[in-house]
Length: 78
Image (tube, rainbow, N blue to C red; front, side):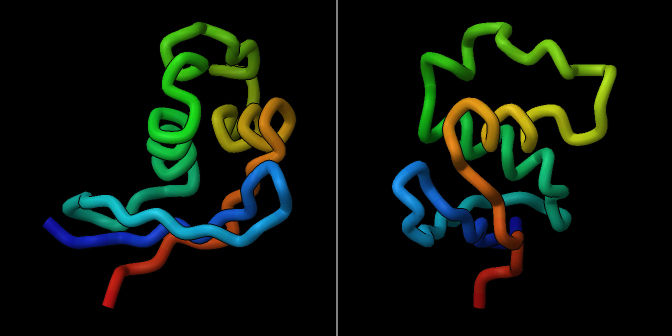
């Protein structure tokens, strides 16, 4: 498995990064799912995403709207 790094801005406006493993380059939606699971485990278990199936990248949008977390990039770790 390859190591990937998610660069994001947290709720306080501070740039952070988080590493995780995937075989192929994850989409921003995959990265948002992982971030929500790690940063907000309780919210991850709740079905709060009313955009699912109605909008592209619903988890990306809900992370930004509900938690002020914005994904900047997903890159392969060196």
